[in-house]
Amino acid sequence: MLSINKWTHAQSLTFKGQTSLWNTLNAKKIDQPRVGLRYIPSVILEHPVSQTNIFDLNCSLNMYATFGLNEEGDLYEDTRSKAYRIWIRYSTPQFEARLGLQKINFGPAALLRSLMWFDRLDPRDPLQITEGVYGFLMRYYFLNNTNIWFWALLGNNRPKGWEVLPSTYSDPEIGGRIQSPVPMGEVGFTYHQREVDISKGLEMLPLFFDAFVSDIPSPDYLKEYFDLQDFKEYRYSCDGKWDIEIGIWLESALIYRDLDLLPYQYQQLFTIGADYTFGLGNGLHLTGEHFFTQYSEEMFGSDQRVDFSAFSLNYPLGLLDTMNGIIFYDWDNEEFYRFLQFQRTYDRWGIYCMLYWNPETFRIYNSAAENSLFTGKGFQIMVVFNH
Image (cartoon, rainbow, N blue to C red; front, side, top):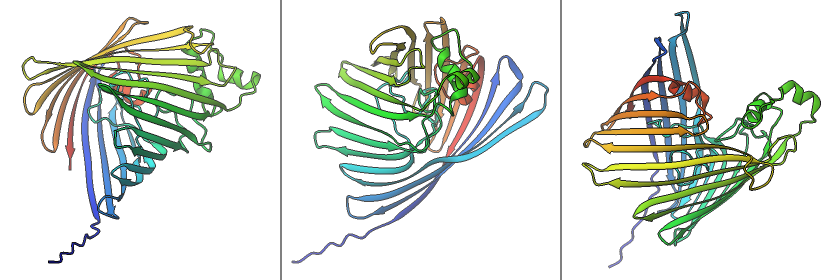
């Protein structure tokens, strides 16, 4: 008997979206509530070229509006719309190449990430929204689970990750990563280099100095008395994660900025963390991390240093409900950041009730626009619908 099976190329088009509505009340501005509305529509097109090889396209927008009352009691609004993800990808079981506006992140840390190079994910954000980067990403996966990455970024002239100064618009950023299994875990090594646009970031340069010097030069002074030129920045990192009764991980990064004007040209970042699920009730999951960054004139010096610690508790109350708490501690300023969240999740709906008790100045993440909602003491409720 002769049997012939013919596989047909089935193209599929999917439209989905996420709507979120939130209301924030700050204890110091109880008469100035803030209301926000966000909608992220996404179009996904898949075109198989064989049984295992696929071309797919993802396009999504981030459309949001915030409303509130100012100190005079007048209503204000801020509405914006921008591209969120626009990329095309070719993938096989062991390879993928992706081009466009996309999210690139790596590393095992969850709360205080030394390898937060291209995103600004906030562990307190239930939606995990972050801006993407324009570029090309290629990954290959070997049969032993070793994988190699290569990327080239272009046209990203806004600071990303921990960056204070932006990259130049027309010079590509290039980098790569290798990640490989080891006994009881895996390790990774990463490299990245970019050209820093000091002219566009001139107004931000005093903030960079403010991290480690008291006599801050003004942008006008810098522009008049220094021949400011774009400069190279080089990043090197090593990370690893192991499961030995408990989960243990570390992230370490060394950054060199080739500019003599800076008081310290070297920066080190280091995160060490662990997690464990205790057999209490439905299972209490505890995560702890310690992070420090230090600046120095020499490669492994320690002239100026900043330390943070963080702990996260997650406890499922049932099939639908979860409690989550996060505490950050700033060792240098001796300040706590507290966050407590109750979450109820259905198939399409999500309800989040969040309490926060933080300092008036947020010093952990750079995404100031979002973090301004969580300064001081307050409450936020968010309703999310996915379709």
